[in-house]
Length: 202
Image 1 (cartoon, rainbow, N blue to C red):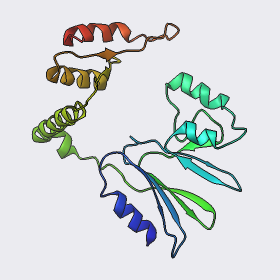
Image 2: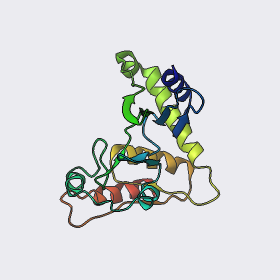
Image 3: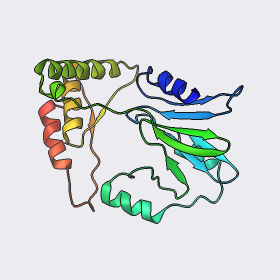
């Protein structure tokens, strides 16, 4: 089927993407996919008369009138530091979740998950795999440091940002790290980030 064709197609893609496939000749179906880990955003708006989507929230909003910010969604953001599920800062604009696709047929919209990450005990307990993950991480960081302009990392003092910043410090003599500090927040990570920054000399 056309849907299976679309799923097979995007499962061969690597990296980040949000992609739309339109079958103009036969089924007239529209398939819209977001990459498996949600690196590339995809936002959409739908009412009785129109459907609009974009990978940029501001460009989508500029195409709409009378879009209101959501008080409930904003409260969720205040508690969680992110918008959960398909929420955005606006009531009528949704985000497509990672590894999901939108299917539009006969003016009906449905959403399906097209990919799942399979968990494996062998994978997590095998030291060879752990070494492979570490090598892939180093390679990815090295590739992303290729730039004609200066690069920097965000350092929140969490595990992920600390690992990335540490690996970057191995490849760069001069490194810049940034940490945002908000006085009104109860949990302040900036002091730990500053300690780690001194440790890697950034």
